[in-house]
Structure formats: C-alpha cells, structure tokens
Length: 355
Image (cartoon, rainbow, N blue to C red):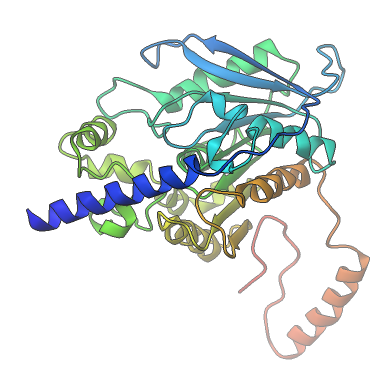
C-alpha cells in the first residue's frame, strides 16, 4: 500500500509540475498566418460523437490544381485537442502546429500541403479493447477518406504523411508501422512509448505520465483501452516495437523520423531510443535525433517541430546526398573491403548500411 501511494504521489507531482511549467510561461506574439485554419466536425460510427477537427489550407490553395496537394495528418498530445493547431500551450510561444507548418512552408522546408488535426482527448488513438471507442479506425476509415473526398489532396500512399507529439507521436508511429502501405512517411516526436516488448516488463519509470492505474480515472481508462484485466496480447499487438519486430521488411520504403529531448521529464527518451534500436537491429533505414538539452515541453518544440516538417519535405523532394563524390569514395572503399575479405553491399536507401 505504501509503495502504491508513493507511486501515485510521484505521478501527480510530475504532472502538476509539468502543467505549472507550461502555464507560467508567457506566450509571445505569433507570426501572421499565410494559410488558413478552419474548424469543423467529422461524423463517425467508430467513436461516440462527431469529432471536432481543424484543417489547414496553404496560401493560395487551389481546389482545381492539376497536381494534388500532399496530405499531413497531425495528432495532438495527451489531453490536447484540434485547437492545438491554433494554440499549443506546450510550445511556450503563441500559435500552434498549424502556424508552425505554415512557417515551414513559407521557409521552403516542405512543399505546400493540406493538414488536419482531430480532437481525441486522452484516447491514445487506440481502438479500445471493450469496443466502446475506435480511434484508430476513426483516423484510418473516417478522417482520411473525409480529407481525400473534401480536398484536392493525393489519393494514394505517395504524399500521405502522419505526425504527432507525445501521445500523438505514439499514435502516428503505431499507425504508420501498422499501415505502411497507406503512409509515405511518419515523423514521430517524443512518442509516449514504453521501452518494453511485453506488458510485464514495464517499470514505474515507464509509467510516469501515462494511465498506469495509480488513480481511479487512470484505471478506468487503462482497462477500457486494454481490457479488464489487461489483455497483454492486445497491448503487445498495438505496441510499435512488437509490430516492427514481427515483420520489419514491411517497413522498407517507409520514411521514419524519431526524435526526443534528452531531458524529457516523462523519460520518453528511453522508449524512443528503444524504438530506434529495434529499427537499427532490423536494418531499417530511419532518422533518429536525441535533442541535447530539450525537455518534453517548452521552447525546444518549435525548432524540433520545424525539423520534423523538414524531414517530411525531404521525403517529397529527396536530396541527392549519395552524389558523384559519395559514389567515387564508395567505389574506392568497396575495393578496399573486397581486398580485406569484407562483404560489399550495394547502396540501398531503405536499409542501414551496416553488416
């Protein structure tokens, strides 16, 4: 009983401290938007009520343009909403994710695109084990078709992207590795993922900031999502690392971006590093950034989010980094490898170049 009370107090203290840090940071005036943010709702039988969404249309959006616009689904963090497109408090600056995307487009980091953010509360974008709410199905079967029907956006995999922060980072990564045939790339920021392949391996540290059962509402939420008692197989089937390990070859060609601050107050750097190692050991090419001095909230999220958008931009317009200079050096190195009896593998942008 004493250890459970201590755990509950620790979780509460961390959450209150994080909330206070965000609330006490004065916002600064945001830049003028070039594009447009619009709120509406999307009807769905997968969740209890119509879902509020905010979508972004870039400057000079043309509904009749011959070349369809890329589509970016953005997933908010725990306790957030579609309003984070306009005002995301964790940024410590005025504006939201719509404004940052607008800035990334204006600065040439990414091509003009259409984006949308649904409001999902703390649902973790999961299909609940009890069947009461199906947020993954909402995104895949309701929101995505709605955007493709309503706007001049791409209709297939190429040019369809998903991203998110914290809870949204976890949701976006899970959906991308579950459905690599749907998304060209995912940019997962500080994904709320435990560094474990089995539910029984989760530690107290990994539960900080998550619905870990220490409070009544947490217990109710956790059991609705994963079953009562917890269905450990269902948990594993929805954990990104177990999905990756089951068949890594499915992810060849999926652009994957992972990032997290090394000062993350919820220790999410542990889970993000874990995903990185699983991908690395499977030989799946990806981009991973451990951002020095960055926490889970605060000013660092502005440049970090712009970096994430820039990664998406590189998927749309891949830079020719393996150029003639790289190929000449590679040819010399390959001859040296052969002479020393070391295996030589051809360049493959979908795999890590390591044996």
